[in-house]
Amino acid sequence: MSTKLEDQLTPECTGCSCCAGRESEHAVSENSDRLKFISIGTGTVIFLIAVIFKFSAAIELTLFLLSYLLIGGEVLLSAIRHIAKGRIFDENFLM
Image 1 (cartoon, helix red, strand yellow):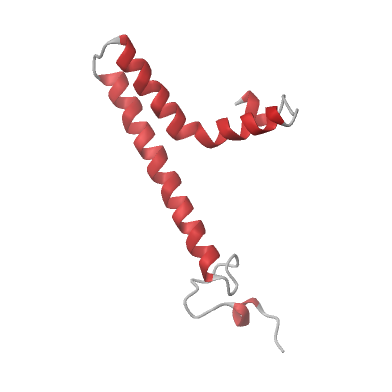
Image 2: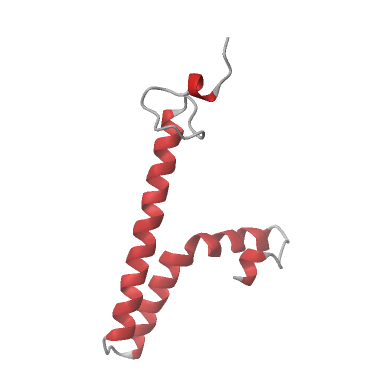
């Protein structure tokens, strides 16, 4: 029985070591990366719209908050979870 990585990979695999016979995990990872990219891109576009165009203060604040939540939402949620567990000063809280 061979234990080489090449023998463990499925024919559909592109050669990454992360899937080694677990195609569904690899697909979830790709979808997660795609969603992160879309979220960051959308947040950036909303931020640029708020900076470039002249809106009322309330609309600008809303656009800035929306872009902040789209881009940094995962860090914000992680910080809230850590604060709830009593770990206040970690890298997520500081970010």
